[in-house]
Length: 130
Image (tube, rainbow, N blue to C red; front, side, top):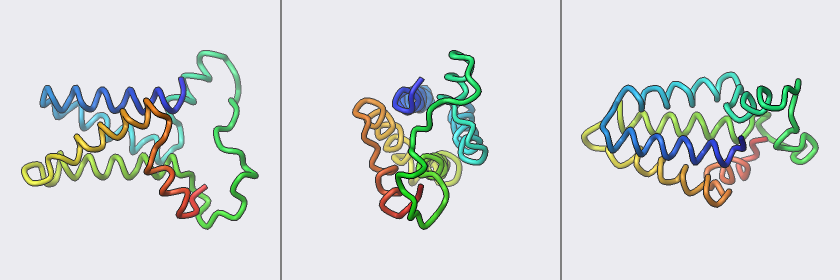
């Protein structure tokens, strides 16, 4: 499983949960995103370790690629925190006024999974995240 497939899967399930108005499923997605951001145990890494029975898989980001990073924190992890924050803003805190934010995030995740271009990750890399 790749990061692209993971983004597409999260976006598609989030759209399904929003259409069905199933709040517990949305809360589960928020918790999974926060867990992945805190521990860096991402679903694609776990699936690849189980599938190929390897101790470690190839790094998605070369460690020498961005040696002058201002923050030694991966942009992928920051993207997960930001997605969880924006989804929770629209579903938990301000459900009536910011209802469009989870839809925006889910459509962006589907777009990032389909094209392989995630604007939020690119933005965080411009801010010198690893």
